[in-house]
Image: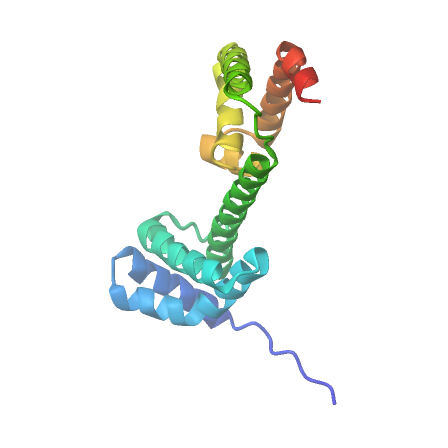
Length: 198
C-alpha cells in the first residue's frame, strides 16, 4: 500500500513566524506553544548527536532558553523557524559532545600518567613540566592576536572553525588560514617539546 506524501503547509510557516514574533514580545504562552510544536524534533536531534537522553533533555532546555532570549534576532530571510531551532540545538549538542570528549581525554591522560617512584623523580618531572609550560606560553604569546584568538576559541571553548567565523564575524577562509599559520608557527617554535612527547 503506497502512502501519499502530505504537501508542506504554507500556512504553517507563517504561523511559526507569528509565534516567534509573540516570543520576541516575551509572551510566555508563545514559548509553551513553541515547545509543544518543536520539542520532539529538537530532542531527537540532540539525542542523535549525544546518544544520551538526559544530556539531550538538558540541550532541549538550553535551546528553548536561547530561543526565548534571542527571538528578536531571528531573521526569516535566512531560515525557517524550525531550521533556526534545529541549528541552535545542534550547536549546543556539539558543544556538549566536545566538552564530554575533552573531559574523557583528560581523564584518560591522568590515568595513563606513570607514578613517580620517589620524591626526587616527582620534583624533576614537576620542573620539566613547568619549563615546558613556560615555553608553550611564550610561543603562544608570540602569535599575532588574530591567530591566537582562533586557537583560544578552538581549544578552550571547543568551537569549530565555522562557529569561530560566525562568532568573530570573519570569513571562514580567513579563520582557516589563521589556524593553519598559528599551528605552523607553534610547530616550528615547539619542535623540542614535540620531540620530547613522541
